[in-house]
Image: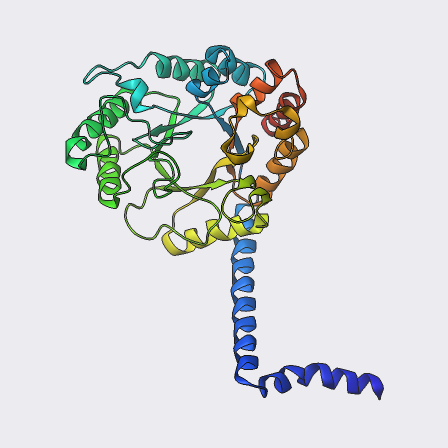
Length: 362
């Protein structure tokens, strides 16, 4: 009898709660709404993860010669180690406007030609970043002779000419797999002045006109619920995921985003349902995030370890794989080499070797 009474009390408790004051009703409605939202999100995530089972996994890295040089490394030696020692077969490369066109109308493709040639020699495929906004600080990379704080009409024709030159140079290159246009275009982080959707639309149309054979990726930021529903709508949606950061907005300390792996599966699944567009994990954080905007070169190894070390690399790659997203590009390969060569800590590099060995042998 006591058991039956307890069960009845449990079952009818929500009804009694609903009969309370208006704030009881408000709390109940909010709780039910949240539960329905989370349940729906989780259901979409499970559907997406199940739909991706059995598909081949592609694990790659971003490589930026300028960043390797900034770290005090030989860029070609670093790139060679990534290809020869890690045996990376999927690369995201950049074509900074500031490097390609240092003076008006004069193009220098020597570095990118070298990277593409080496990729071909090693049987690797390339997703090539193009446009004004590309990976790494200061995010936007105009040449010194362009002032993007001025009216767009004063520099957009030059930007389009540069984009056209890059596409013409590499569209028939056998290693080219895709383009990434305007990295995280609507993220106001960095030294950028223009976030005009009309310009993004025209750039996408330009690239598709010049090369209709290679898909175009556009990347969103990570930790918000949002989808690409309006133009520009590319062929593939890229997702960036940063988990261990220094938070400068609320807590002013190291912060780990609490989102589970299935959250990103939900983002990819919902995008697929709503637009039919596939998603890839185009930038997965596998390098430290120094505190207070501190330069990585002046950050001690012990401080770096607070957001990234060999164990974090292992767990982060596993996290990425658990999302169900089959194309994953790791962020920070130049740093791994810097850590090994300059800081004399081989642990991250050796872990990366093991990870890529396991992936390539699947």
